[in-house]
Length: 590
Image 1 (cartoon, helix red, strand yellow):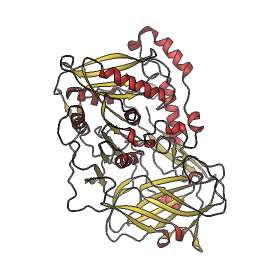
Image 2: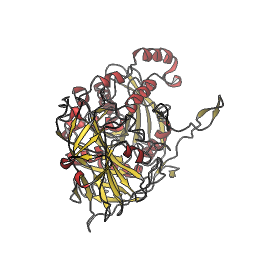
Image 3: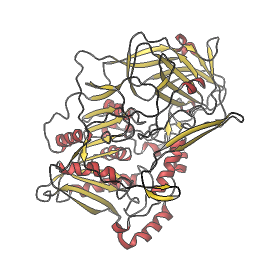
Image 4: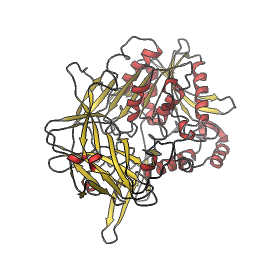
């Protein structure tokens, strides 16, 4: 990591209160060039509920001063009812949040140190609302950078996947946000009224899990804030960034395919993190330099080529042995001039041509997985911790109906979505089907490549629930999550199908058995074949402004001491006598 110290321009830091139309004030921190009141500069906004005075302060210190030192006023704002901001938080990505965000943009554009043009950026929540506010097309918002975010609140967030209800992460995230929103404002920011403000916040805050559970189909609740409902509403240029170990990576490809405004995409090997932070898996990239070029192009009119070159830059990871942690993933960067790309073609594999680990009788294979299938799923949101990623999948493969294709005679590189076309029947009216694509090495180790889920009651659309006709075969089509992965010659592709995937996916009330009509089932792979004119891609090394030093507190032998906080952990065990399986997870959300 390279720290720019000193920064190219001298900066000042100040706190401000941004008034909303109804009198509520939002707390903001502003980093800007010292001379910006005399020579106004463009503004950059990051808008979050994650408490700028504590939780995101280290991360904020890495990037906001950097942007200010490169000629921007960079502003970090706490959403209403969070951190030290006034008012009541009502829900994630709410209409209130968006109305306030538009008022914040208007306020920034009117400040004497701002030249009237803005960019917006963020990761996860901040990436979501960057897209959402861009869909309102405020005049001052000229470009956005969205990282590890989603255009689809229902089917590509922490609540539902393939129409199936997510288990551990929806529950833990609801609890985490309830805890965040119950914390007090900072006394030295809000003054003596902090106790009254905190008491009012405690009386108003509500856990969001019940709301999410009450909307199990894709209704108006989820359509609000899902920019996939109308991509044409986004007029500002978009730089979309994701990671192959982040659950939201599909969004990058969807935005490139559907946006009418200028769009560029980057997908690296990263987890749910900014790609300059040095967190596993690497390698990282010069994200801040890349985004400064983006801001310079669209906010300052610099003809620097940020809008030229490959539309998609993607990291092609090499095959690796299964592990829950990789410091770095070996591989290379590839460039594609457009997405969808002619360099990616569909390669079909028929399940009838594969060997299966369960009996195939008269062309039919039964899938009835034990309920602890999914114990080796790894974490839904990898953050770079030592236990985040899926371990060897052989145990999971044995709990599934697994189909092994012939060993590859030549390497295959996958880039994009794997599509499944299945003909199946269920003996229950409700069922889930889960599919995992694994890379099986000659020694038998099984590395998870990608996976997908379909709630069979949502097979006709996520907006409706159609019970399965028990005992009757139906045709279903669903995608696995997008992937970049190079499979070597001599390795075997394995498709593992299961009816359970706890604790990722909440089970239905009845345990279903699925019957696959193997002759009618197939998998379509996105095979990437570079051409002679494939553009070369180089990504710079990360650099940041010098971050805040962190002095974290931890308990040691019952005593509070200054030490590191133990990272997220994950452990499993089972009682052979009772058949009980236990998964112990600390998500480590902070």
